[in-house]
Length: 614
Image (tube, rainbow, N blue to C red; front, side, top):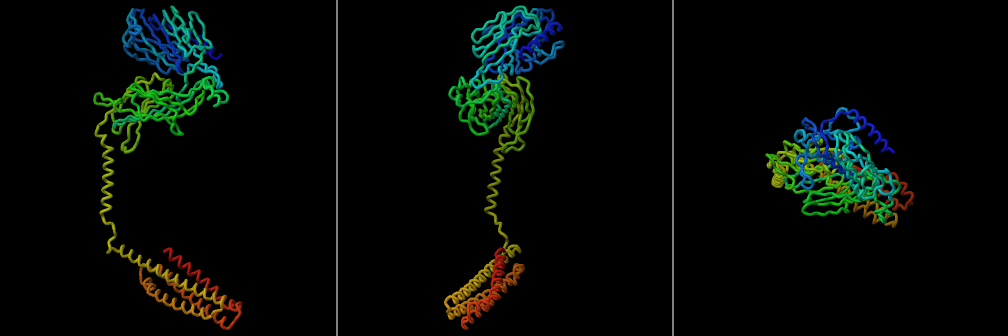
């Protein structure tokens, strides 16, 4: 099996280390108590180390070691100096921990150096509380399961404490999610009680003692991992802190093998979907308000919220159950009262807010926290209880001029233990609070003044100016053109009436009625011709109409020619009827005239259209 080969190689390297590595110091671990909690996807190890200096020289540093496969997945490490026992135990100080490169140790061991609160002299003892959180050490086995199979994981550890120091007494307790255990390594002094598996105590262990164990058990925990989480915390000195969190979550448990049956899942969700998780629990600050939960589609209404004076809990239910390998994307947003998170110290203000995700037992592979400070903030500094990558950006929002400073904190492999408070210090003058209201007031003031000036001022053109006079002349030209168009249209209507009298003549043979229509049309056309003369005179004399006057003159000439052709046609037709000529003979006589009439009529229509466009 793959895990066995890894363990064998580790044993070999450890044996070489024991033979080749000199003693680190004369420190002895008189008592070691280890507790491993695997009830969630994070393996949380708590160690109580009672350290004794049995040598003659003082020691100021303590060395912690982990197998490399655990060290590579170490997400959180904390060492506290404590005193007392049981319920009376109390922490004294958090100790500085740094990764070290111990000479002579193989690459299969990760080494960390702890700075003691004071040099430990001969015969003195102290107690250290070590908390370590590991991700990706609970490996799904098998790696792929069907919808109806249970979720099994495997833990690899050592029943004996791996340390460069001799251990006088050591015990190990593993807290499992439940009593369903497929298998576990049985060694001397091994006891299984319900969901607690205990190894030891083991006495008088040599440095770098290692006894590999493997525990194979069922886990119903949600292996929810945020591949990326972006938390934007926007601070407004108008009384609100707005938090927006964008999640990209994947189920990192055993992947689903085969097809998913919604029918089976709905009918029997426990046996037919035990490996999936259907909800996540977010524990928000107590006075959170305006809470929303949505994704790219829109608002998700399946969430539930409960709140009291100590906390606000948001139960998040995705749109679909998440099996191994499945992903979901969603956003959580909520507001917080500024007075709960903004404080003052030594002439500066500081925001005191939690770093990690509020979702319980969520592992985050890449966390980006963006703290957006008010515009005008300066002298910015950040205090964090652990190492993070820091940078600063500028964000522009409504009514911003110079932009708002943004403190960007980034950290990989984040676990719930990192959900501690961070402090962002900055200087901010209350005068900057007035910038946006003053900007709005100034904007409305300018708008109202502009409206007053516009309504009261006279923007009309002077009546004595050349521009105004030219406009008047052009208006007169346009009015004259409209009158000319109207008269020409009346002439064309008279022509149509004369043509209609000829059609009636061919139908009834009434010559007298046709002559009367001719006489009436002659009289009308003469009157219209008289009306045209002053209009043509005005256009010919007006400088503004110099470019249009030739077209109007051409229009009048064409209309006059059309009158003559129509009158000649009318005379020819009437004479033919008086002489009692045949209809075909009359049509032959007027054929050439009719073609000319049609052509003239079309030319007149084109000229009218040209003038109408002007």
